[in-house]
Structures are given as structure tokens and as C-alpha cells.
Image (cartoon, rainbow, N blue to C red; front, side):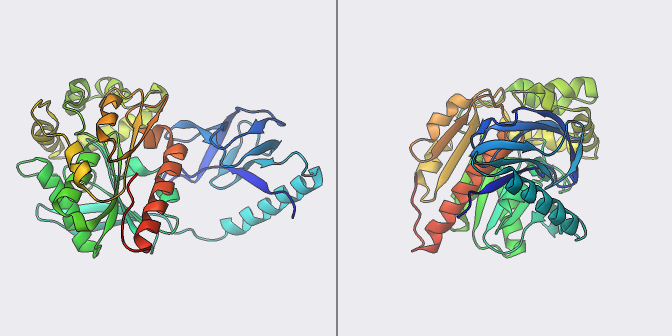
Amino acid sequence: MSAPIHPLSMPKWGMTMTVGTLVAWLAEEGAEIAPGDEVAEVETDKMTSGVEAHYAGTLRRKVAAVGDVVPVGGLLGVIAASDVSDEQIAAFVDTRATEAVTAGEQEEEGPRSETVDGALGPLHAVVHGEGGETVVLLHGFGGDARNWRFNLEQLAQGRTVVAFDLPGHGESTKDVGAGGADVLVAAVIELLDARGVERAHLVGHSLGGLVAVGVAKRAPGRVASLALLAPVGLGPDVAADYVDGFVAASSRRELKPTLQMLFADERMVTRPLVEEVLRYKRLDGVGEALATIRDTVLRGDPERESIAADLASLDIPVLVVWGAEDRVVSSRYAEAAEPAARVEVLSGVGHSPHVERPDEVNRLLDGFLAASEVGRSGDDTQERR
């Protein structure tokens, strides 16, 4: 059997991303590469980020040059064992080029927008993939379904992924009633009912993590597993500078430093990102909705019961992922989830690990979901780590 040859390809980080620009090579030809190593740096209209290798081997060829605009899935480089001949590498590159032309002639079915009726008004979601089990993604405070743009493609391999706009956010109703986590929990259950989903895997970021646990507590039979990214609720507080700053900001100058608190690498906050959030904040009803959720859910309350007790009572797999440099919800709260959950703390990452380190988080989520699905397909029992 011949040694495998692996592509280093342009990732699809955004729902609308079609191309990226190679801005730097971070490894030289001949360098030994391990899975997770950042090999190149790519720029899109939303961000600049490293491209991680998924395979071990030697970087045998740089196919793209710095400055090249490469389509999603296009070949950046080739990773293979040192004993693979140069002729085999050349044949692989030629074959990939032919496949790229053929693929470019086919229309790709991408994420689709769906709206269902809820008690407070329309509930919007972005759906990707078809068949398999259902994974529901719940964003954080002030976010929306687009926050998962770097995760949808990977998680939708063999699954149906539903990125939900919580009430008060995105394209969902801006009516949040009296506020409180119960309103958001009820909306998630309404979404499941409207889509005919009996049981789903929930992935929640920050506020969305608190909501995901609330769904599992209220309707335990509806939740197959929980993956929580820097969740609210394991500790008593959320950074007031972020929450109050986000609610109050009405200009680029005010909003940018607030958004930078979400990341260890503040360069992640680009002008297009700031403009995108400002457009949302200027929609009718958004200011009132955010203030209500802040006051009913996110204000520091030392007497608020920790969701750690809820996690301990659930008989489903739980994964907690946190950035060690989180400035919004401290990563020291992660230990409160143990031993009910498997905990992963990522160095050099802030409050939004799925955006700042998407490849690593996608691998963690994909492996966790695959193991949870296997657990269900056996005798319908769940093994907790």
C-alpha cells in the first residue's frame, strides 16, 4: 500500500465564504507537521486566522503562494511522508486541480434559513446538513446564528445542524417578555417541537450554555448531550464591563473595545465584524431586549444557584470547553463542572473559542458528538466522562 498523501486545503469558515487569501506560510517545505499545527495564515473579509493541519507528515509542497486568492476547498499545500516520491506529489496536485474544476461546476447546497412560529413571535434558525442526528447551536449574549459560521460545515457532516437565533437576537422576535432564562429555554423547546425533533444534542456558548442546561433540566428526555463553551452559570458573575458596554455601545468607537473582550487575540475584531454587530443593535426592540436579558439573567447574583448541580443530576454526556484567557466569564469556573463533565481548557484563547480556534473546537465537538451518538445507538444508555 502506498503512503498516504494529504491536502492542506482552504477551510470554509463562514456560511458565505467562497474564497480566502493566503497571507503567510507558517512552516517551510520539509518541516515536520503534527495534527493541530498552524501551517498557513489566511485572510477573509471577516478575519485573519491560521489554517491547522489535520494530518501528520512532512510539508512536501507549497501549492499556493502568498497573495493568492484560493477558493474554499482549494489546495494550499501537500502533506505526506518523506518517502513519497516527487512524481507522486505532482500527480496528486494535478488530480486535485482537476477535481476542483469539476466541483466548481456543481452548485453546492449551503446553509438555509428557516423561521417557525413561537409564543412571542417568529423564531429564526440557520440549518445545514440533512439526516442523522440533530445538533442545535445556541449563541451567547448579543450574538446570533452567524457566530457559528466557522463550525457549521464540519458539524453538519452526517448530521442536521440548527443554529438558532434566541429571542431578542438575530432574525428572531425581539419580544422577550419578562425576560429570564425560562423565556429562552421555552423558545428552544418550541423550535424542537416545530421541527419535529424528539431529541437533540445541544451546543451552547456563554448565555447559550446556560440556556442549554435549562432545556436539559426542564425536558431531560429531549437532550442527548450537552457541549458548553464558556457557559454562564458555573460561577456567580459575568464581566459587567462587557455586558454593560455591549448594551450601551452605539458607535464603532464604543463597541470595538467591548467586542475585543471576547478574544485573546484582539485582531479578531475587524471593521466588518463591528459594522455587522452595530447593524443588529440598531434594529427596533434590540436595546430593550438586551437590557431585559441582562437585568434578569446576567446581573451578578451571589445567591444564584450554580448549574453545576444540574449537570451532576443529568444522565447524559457533557463536554465543557473554555478559553484560559477568558475576560468575560472566568475559566476558573470550569472546575465546578467536574466530575459531571469532561473539561477542556484551551491556552491562548478567550471567551469565544469556537471563533478564535475553530479547527480545534470543531475536532473536540465532532469527536464528542460522535461518541455520544455511538452511546445512543447501542442500548440507549449514556456513558459520562
